Length: 111
Image 1 (cartoon, rainbow, N blue to C red):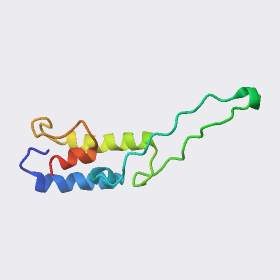
Image 2 (spheres, rainbow, N blue to C red):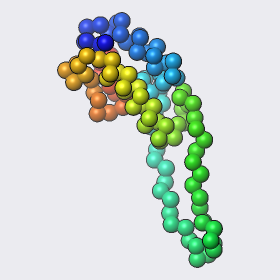
Image 3 (cartoon, rainbow, N blue to C red):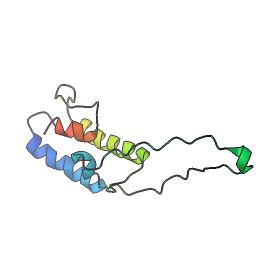
Image 4 (cartoon, rainbow, N blue to C red):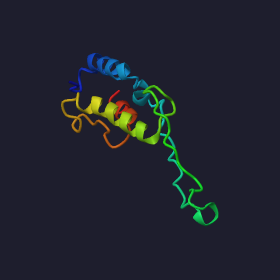
Protein backbone atom coordinates (compact mmCIF):
# COMPACT_ATOMS: atom_id res chain seq x y z
CA UNK A 1 0.00 0.00 0.00
CA UNK A 2 1.05 3.56 -0.69
CA UNK A 3 2.35 5.25 2.45
CA UNK A 4 3.72 8.48 0.99
CA UNK A 5 7.31 7.23 0.74
CA UNK A 6 7.07 4.24 -1.58
CA UNK A 7 5.63 5.72 -4.78
CA UNK A 8 8.54 4.50 -6.98
CA UNK A 9 7.56 0.91 -6.16
CA UNK A 10 3.81 1.36 -5.66
CA UNK A 11 2.98 3.60 -8.64
CA UNK A 12 4.10 1.21 -11.40
CA UNK A 13 2.20 -1.63 -9.73
CA UNK A 14 -1.02 0.37 -9.70
CA UNK A 15 -0.41 1.36 -13.32
CA UNK A 16 0.01 -2.33 -14.27
CA UNK A 17 -3.23 -3.28 -12.47
CA UNK A 18 -5.10 -0.43 -14.16
CA UNK A 19 -3.69 -1.30 -17.59
CA UNK A 20 -4.79 -4.93 -17.21
CA UNK A 21 -8.37 -3.61 -17.41
CA UNK A 22 -7.48 -1.12 -20.16
CA UNK A 23 -7.99 1.85 -17.84
CA UNK A 24 -4.74 3.72 -18.38
CA UNK A 25 -6.58 6.57 -20.08
CA UNK A 26 -8.63 7.16 -16.94
CA UNK A 27 -5.46 7.30 -14.86
CA UNK A 28 -3.65 9.77 -17.11
CA UNK A 29 -6.78 11.76 -18.01
CA UNK A 30 -6.70 11.03 -21.75
CA UNK A 31 -10.18 9.46 -21.66
CA UNK A 32 -12.38 12.44 -20.94
CA UNK A 33 -15.80 12.49 -19.32
CA UNK A 34 -18.32 12.59 -22.17
CA UNK A 35 -20.75 15.48 -22.50
CA UNK A 36 -24.17 14.67 -21.10
CA UNK A 37 -26.73 13.42 -23.61
CA UNK A 38 -29.63 15.74 -24.33
CA UNK A 39 -32.71 14.96 -22.30
CA UNK A 40 -35.59 13.33 -24.13
CA UNK A 41 -38.40 15.68 -24.99
CA UNK A 42 -42.02 14.72 -24.56
CA UNK A 43 -43.14 13.10 -27.80
CA UNK A 44 -45.77 14.91 -29.77
CA UNK A 45 -48.42 12.19 -29.97
CA UNK A 46 -50.96 14.57 -31.48
CA UNK A 47 -49.22 14.43 -34.84
CA UNK A 48 -47.60 11.00 -34.67
CA UNK A 49 -50.41 8.90 -33.24
CA UNK A 50 -49.27 6.18 -30.85
CA UNK A 51 -45.69 6.15 -32.15
CA UNK A 52 -43.33 8.37 -30.16
CA UNK A 53 -41.68 11.10 -32.22
CA UNK A 54 -38.24 10.18 -30.88
CA UNK A 55 -36.94 7.06 -29.20
CA UNK A 56 -33.55 7.14 -27.52
CA UNK A 57 -31.64 3.94 -28.11
CA UNK A 58 -28.96 3.05 -25.56
CA UNK A 59 -25.46 3.24 -26.99
CA UNK A 60 -23.56 0.05 -27.75
CA UNK A 61 -21.24 -0.96 -24.90
CA UNK A 62 -17.61 0.05 -25.37
CA UNK A 63 -14.37 -1.55 -24.25
CA UNK A 64 -12.41 -0.01 -21.39
CA UNK A 65 -9.75 1.64 -23.58
CA UNK A 66 -12.41 3.24 -25.81
CA UNK A 67 -11.99 7.00 -26.19
CA UNK A 68 -15.79 7.36 -26.48
CA UNK A 69 -17.48 5.62 -23.53
CA UNK A 70 -21.03 6.45 -22.55
CA UNK A 71 -21.48 8.66 -19.51
CA UNK A 72 -22.42 5.67 -17.35
CA UNK A 73 -19.44 3.65 -18.58
CA UNK A 74 -17.08 6.55 -17.92
CA UNK A 75 -18.42 7.09 -14.40
CA UNK A 76 -18.13 3.40 -13.50
CA UNK A 77 -14.65 3.01 -14.95
CA UNK A 78 -13.33 6.21 -13.41
CA UNK A 79 -14.69 5.09 -10.02
CA UNK A 80 -12.95 1.71 -10.42
CA UNK A 81 -9.62 3.45 -11.11
CA UNK A 82 -10.18 5.80 -8.16
CA UNK A 83 -10.79 2.74 -5.99
CA UNK A 84 -7.48 1.24 -7.12
CA UNK A 85 -5.71 4.37 -5.89
CA UNK A 86 -7.65 4.92 -2.66
CA UNK A 87 -8.01 1.33 -1.48
CA UNK A 88 -4.33 0.67 -2.09
CA UNK A 89 -3.25 3.61 0.07
CA UNK A 90 -2.77 3.52 3.82
CA UNK A 91 -4.28 6.93 4.60
CA UNK A 92 -5.70 8.64 1.50
CA UNK A 93 -6.83 11.75 3.39
CA UNK A 94 -3.57 12.11 5.29
CA UNK A 95 -1.60 11.60 2.08
CA UNK A 96 -3.55 14.40 0.41
CA UNK A 97 -5.08 12.24 -2.29
CA UNK A 98 -7.71 14.26 -4.15
CA UNK A 99 -10.79 12.07 -3.86
CA UNK A 100 -13.30 14.75 -4.85
CA UNK A 101 -12.53 14.75 -8.57
CA UNK A 102 -11.60 12.23 -11.21
CA UNK A 103 -9.20 9.32 -10.93
CA UNK A 104 -6.73 11.31 -13.05
CA UNK A 105 -6.93 14.18 -10.55
CA UNK A 106 -6.34 11.76 -7.67
CA UNK A 107 -3.34 10.28 -9.46
CA UNK A 108 -1.92 13.71 -10.27
CA UNK A 109 -2.26 14.75 -6.62
CA UNK A 110 0.31 12.12 -5.58
CA UNK A 111 2.66 11.96 -8.56
